[in-house]
Structures are given as structure tokens and as C-alpha cells.
Amino acid sequence: MMAMLKRLLSLLLSCFSWYLISLPSPPYPDPAEFIQCLREKIPSELVYEQSSSNFTDVLASSIKNPRFFTNATARPLCIVTPTDARHVQAAVLCGRRHGVRLRVRSGGHDYEGLSYRSPRPDEVFGVLDLASLRSVSVNRSESTAWVDSGATLGELYYAIARNNSRVAFPAGECPTVGVGGQFSGGGIGMMMRKYGLSIDNVLDARMVNANGDLLDRDGMGEDLFWAIRGGGGESFGVVLSWKIQLVQVPPTVTVFSIGKTLDQGAIDILTRWQVVGPSLPDDLAIRVKVQGQEALFLAVYLGTCSSLVATMGRRFPELGMTSADCRSMTWLESAALSFTTLANIGTPEEVLLNRTSSLNFSNKGKSDYVRRPISKAAWNDIFSWFNTSGSRYIMLEPHGGFMDRVPADATPYPHRNGVLYIIQYLVFWQGGGGTAPPAAWLDDFYDFMGQHVSTNPRRAYVNFRDLDIGQNVVVDDVSTFDGGEVWGERYFMSNYRRLATVKAAVDPTDYFRNEQSIPPLL
Ligand code: FDA
Image (cartoon, rainbow, N blue to C red; front, top):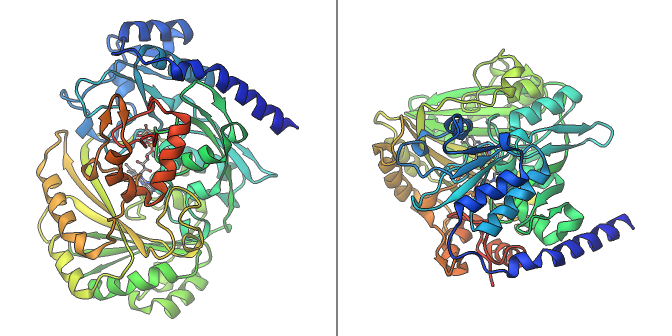
């Protein structure tokens, strides 16, 4: 009965707000009217204009990549920092009415900075920064939680474990990443072999659509609910919060980190890992970081040291792991470890609550998926790309387990059965600037890797966003389906078409748009 009433109400609201969609957008943005509209509807202390004394601080507050914080970076007209859903609704309505698009920011970790900058210097846009909407409310008896998009993963992990240390949530390794962006694109992490991606554990969501309506799962319907769980951020509206299913973890987990140089057989072990890693028991994940002339094997096991040693001896003796490599700790302590080395054991868990991270290093990332093991000879060639100095590494994360059992169209994330692992490529350099030499090295290495990874299409992970693989083509102020196909099919395979169909139904005038948002299939 309640659900029916909600559906009726949402139908009425969407009929009422249809006039907004059918109104032609103003021919060009009207920034002054937009700001005026915001000022009338949102408390003034939540709206920062470029002239505000702390505008730059608020803008920088969650920028993770100084590449997009230079004098040449196009800055937003204003930043709105809502503390309530009504502020978000008002900002969307003002934006629609006065032709100003909003870029939504949760944790600011977008690899291309699309949540707070525009690659087009002439674009007039506002930023909706959700950092103040970050509560986490755990329901212990249901083993569920509602988490706001502006919370970081660290804040989420901390709140869950403080309430009940026997439950956790499968998501990424870096605690400063925002829930909003990560859940919008998938959420891979060290528990995905056991429990899947973050999106596989989302039960409900609250969002504001392009009409300014506030919708929950019942109100938005199953197609839109499907699309927001993995279809990439920004495309369908502003997701305010997510209801998630928490997952069981043992009282202690075991981690290890074992480095192997070329002399210690890194290539043989890595070649073997490609087959073993994705087929180990689901509660064990071993990721590999290749940097310089070393392969670093990093593991999290949801169990005890003794059973881990037995499993490793049986399934992966080549690594030579022994009980001396085990470090036992609570799951929350493991979440607080450095996500690229599993170092800093003993750091207080409160580190998870730290939202800030250094702005010292610019970076550029790319991704690939591997479905057939790369040969030993090819690994020899790959390591030769890392024998010169430079801050760069690749991270290999095993799929398999739970991931193999989810159909490719169950969520927009299609890289399921048959994927052995995902590769993330990362280069770093000091300070800002967009065309630093390491990025050129990355382009060449990525070209070289094409022969070893998935093809037709060459796949990529939307959360490791890469504008080099394509950007939207806008015709008559709407992104075209064909223009998005190049990058869309690489991120979403055949789910791209369904995503574009949903977009056409909920945002046909393409209000929520960035360089890789889903175009409407009209
Ligand atoms: P940000 O706020 O920049 O948003 C990213 C995109 O989503 C933007 O397009 C934005 O407009 C949109 N968006 C944000 N909030 C939204 C909302 N509430 N509603 C609608 N759209 C919204 N990934 C992973 O799966 N596993 C991992 O372990 C890691 N680790 C990792 C480490 C580091 C250091 C970085 C920089 C990144 C990762 N990632 C990752 C990738 C990460 O998941 C990806 O960059 C996310 O989009 C970041 O989410 P944020 O909210 O922080 O970004």
C-alpha cells in the first residue's frame, strides 16, 4: 500500500515537473540569474562564489590531483555545499532554469577531475560539493546501513566496525575516496572475490533527478536503480545516499606483503599468479603491484594465519609464503593499512577519518582487463618498461570467485565471468601541469600492452576514468549516442545501450552531463 502511494506521488510529481523538461533551455547560461536563484533558495553560507574569500580553499578541499588545480584550470562559477536534500533539489532547479550545469563532487578522486573542473575553458558550471552530507547510520539488527554520498570509504568502514566489528563492507582500498563516486562506478576491492563489488551490495538509494524530484528505489523504478549502480557518476542525477547490505567478517583477518625481485623469480611467480589468483578460495585476495624490477604480492585473507599457510602451500607454493609473513588484525585495522604496500601496521584506525590527502603529486591512470594469462616471455618485455627511473606502477587485482557468478548485465559493470584480473596503470609526477613526460611514457606503455589484454572492445573500468579513450560529442546541446559508443562500450560493453535508454527516459535534455556521461538514446 505504502509503495503504491509512493509510486503515485512520484508519478504526480514527475507530471508536474514535466514542464521543466519540455521548456527549451535558455540559449546560453545566465550566471547572474543562476546565482540569484541559489541565493533565494539556499542559505548564503552554503554558496561560495569566486569572489568569496574562502572559495579557493573550498574548491581545493577535496582535489586529489594538482594536475587539475593550476591557473589554467577552468574553475566553477560557484560551489554549493548542501547540508540537506532540499538544497540539492534547489540547486538542480536553479541550474535547469538558468542553463547552468552542475558538476557533482563527493570525494573528489575522479582521475580526470570531472567533478570540479571542465576540460573546456569556456564552460560555465557550478559545483555541488556533497562533503557536508556524510552521515552513516548502521542498523545492527538488519545488518544494513544508510550512507551519504559525501562520506569517505574510511568514514564508512570506521562507522560500521565501531557499531559491530563482525561486519564490514566490500569497497575500495583508499580511505579518502568518496562513497558517491565510487558506488556510482562499481567499487572494486579486496573483498570482491567473496562478496562482489560495492554495487552488488546496494539495496536502495535516494537521489535527486533532473526535475529536482527526490526519489528512492520505489520512486525511481528498477531501470534507473540499475543504472545508478555502476553506470558512472553524474549521468542520471545526484545520488544523496545509499542503503547497503553489510557483510560478515571474522574477528581477525590475516594480511601479508611479499616482494619478489627478478632474481627471486618474480616473472615465474607472476605468470603463475594469473591462473591461481582468480581461482583461490573466495575469502583470499592477492593483488600484485609491479614497480621497478619487483612484483609485490599483497594479500587479505578472511581467516586465520594457519589456514592461510595451508591454503598457500597447497595452491600457490611458488610464492614461498610462511607463517612468518602473516600479520593478524581486525578487519578495520587492515582497512587502515597503506593500500599499495600494506605497510604502516599499528597506525591508529582513526586515520580512516582523515579526509585530506597531499596535493603533491599529479597523476594519470588507465586500465585494462585480462582474460587470457600473459605469457612469461611477455612479462619479460613488460618488466623492461620499468627498468628506468620514474614514479610509475601497475596494480593487478584478481577477479574470479563471486565476480564470476554475477551475470554481465546484472549491473552496468560487465567485467564478470572470464575476467582474470584488472590492471590499473598509474604514473606520478611532482606538482601540477598536464603534459608532464610520465604521461607520455604511459601512452606508449598502454599502446604496447594492447596485444596482451582484452580486445573487441579493449575494456576499461569507468572508475579509473580516462578521457583519452573518448569524450562525448554534443550536437544541439545533447550528447550523441554514437559519439559515446567508443568509450561507452569499453566501460560497459552491451550495457551501454541500456544505460543510454535509461538516460533518455530520465534526462532527455542531457542536463547532467560531463565528457563521459551517458548520452540519451533518443
Ligand atoms: P568524485 O567526487 O571526483 O566523483 C567521481 C565522479 O562521480 C564524477 O563524475 C562525479 O561528478 C560523480 N559523482 C560523485 N558523486 C556523485 C553523486 N553523489 N551522484 C552522482 N554522481 C556523483 N576505485 C575502486 O573501485 N577501488 C579502489 O580501490 C580505488 N582506489 C582508488 C584510490 C585512489 C587514490 C584514487 C584517486 C581512486 C581510486 N579508485 C578506486 C577510483 C575511485 O573509485 C573513483 O575515482 C571514484 O569515482 C571516486 O569517487 P569520489 O566520490 O571520490 O570522486
